Length: 208
Image (cartoon, rainbow, N blue to C red; front, side, top):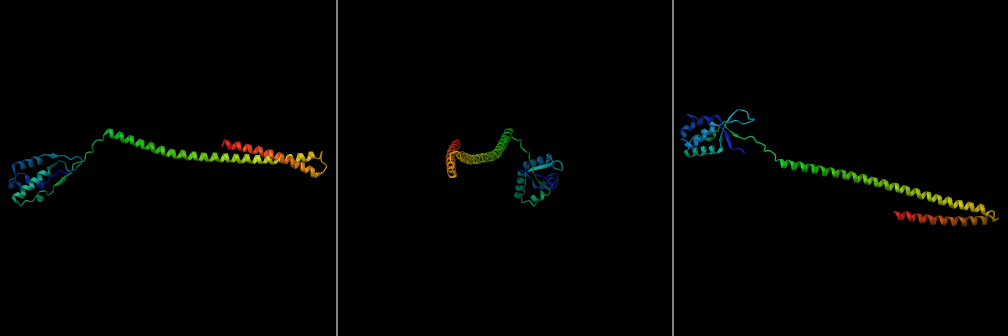
């Protein structure tokens, strides 16, 4: 925050010997403070123009008040011609090591949480895909087993019918009797196969 003024050449001359303020009968204390302030030269780092004479705003206000009380024809804005407000260079305060360490710890923690969130999503997706493929494989195996079972059932029934028909030729002379015997044996074999199939399916369902 600005609290000083860089005295211009006009103000320096006015306060010097034979200057405009010499006849204003400045209080001894005020003149001494003004001369002491102008006698000090301040070097502003990074500011062109070399050393500067700084006057606190307090002295400027006291000078202005004195001129008003005397009814002087010398105005303050005329004296301040060429002067500038002094803005001190901002000095960045050192960072607290504990605060820096805490901030770094928070950054690392947030980064780890973000990484875990991303990897969790990837893991869930992989598990979901793996579960889908596993279920599909089970379904394919189940369909394959069912097709094989049906094929075996048909082959067994047909084989029982053919074998019975051929064997019954030695017992029955009529074709109708041979066919009837073959149908009966094939039916019995088919029922037995169905019973075995049902028990096997019940066992598989129980395991699931």
